[in-house]
Image (cartoon, rainbow, N blue to C red; front, side):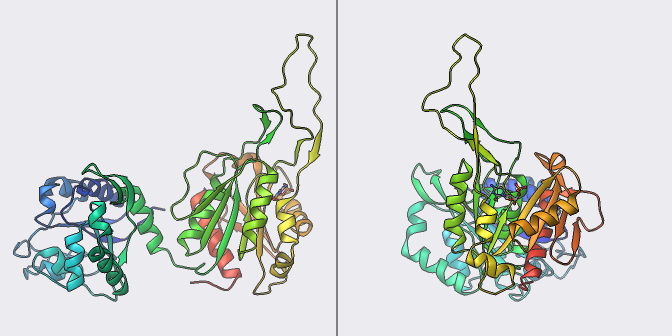
Amino acid sequence: MLELQGKHIVLGLSGGIAAYKAAELCRSMVKEGATVQVVMTEAAEHFMTKVTMQALSGRQVFGSQWDDTPASGKNGENIANNMPHINLSRGADAIVIAPCSADFMAKLLHGRADELLSLLCLARQTDKVPLILAPAMNREMWANPATQRNVAQLKADGITVLDVGEGDQACGEVGDGRMLEADEILADLVAFFTPKSLLGQKVIITAGPTYEAIDPVRGITNLSSGKMGFAIARAAFEAGADVTLIAGPVSLATPRGVKRVDVKSAKNMLVAGVKYADYATIFIASAAVADWRPANLADQKLKKDGTGKVPELSFVENPDILATIAQSERGKKGLSGMPDGLFCVGFAAESQDLLANAQAKRIRKGVPLLVGNIGPATFGQDDNALLLVDAKATKELPPNGGKASKRDLAQQLVADIAARLGVQA
Ligand code: C5P
């Protein structure tokens, strides 16, 4: 499933050096299934050509309210009434201004409409067509009280103002105010369109493998990639939750908006899990935690001594993070469906007898929901199949059998958990 399938976006460019990022944004929105109608201010044309944006969007780019080319909205019918400021936004799922300059924000704030882009923003149906701004400017312009006042008022008017990036600016200064990268704006847009089924929920998720050190340079780990847990974190954030991801050693990028706590060993993961569980409403344990760790951590690297003698390793069992948290007072309340409880979800990676093993594990851990999957078939893969097991029933994801991407499965799992908690959007 493409992320913006069926969406019609009006992409407005105001003047700013970040206009070059709008080309990439347009391309990625189209790749994700959106139709994109580009509108550029005269200032934007100093930074980016209409030709580029037309080629990338596959639609004529509009720049002037006096342009008498028939303009159309979502459904593509041409209306020759010479009113692009009305027609272009009709049926749009959103107007996105990227880059949005300080001057353009000031214009929007005052409802000024002296060129096509601000005119069509003013003429949009505010109850149907959300307006989303990606600000882009020098750090002093961003920090200026006038700009900050405008941002606050635009938000109060129901306009979505995305964050700005921080770092090197084209002017040579360093600070806040750069426009987000195209992939970040795309992620924010996808989140914007996601129903907020977990609004108000605080979710913690463990993901990835753990690493149990033998000596300062060696350790024991497993093949868990963390992809499922990271996908769940992303889906939960998009659904409106406050998400903390406790990640074992993996090199995956942190999903936008998700707070990440990096840990190595099971003991580290337990400390972080217990700490954040205090404030959470949902705990999802997707990490492949090592069952055992070496009993003794050698101070120095274990060396060969030339005699052929091998070191003898002995192991102790790791704490069970999920069971510890699920069997806490709030975990038990969650199990019995009490509103102030912590709803715990476990995973089981099995190699056979999925249902029987998952059900037994659910009871042993003391969790209301256990998600089973076949371990060797999922580790490191992008696709998977899940079996949800609760006290009464089982449910397959994807619903009709087969496999689905971990992204799709994460969205389905989040929707399922939201429905169980009765907070469906
Ligand atoms: O017992 P087993 O490892 O099969 O249980 C899997 C489930 O328990 C997963 O949800 C996993 O994240 C969690 N777990 C844990 N701490 C452990 C072992 C497993 O949280 N030490």
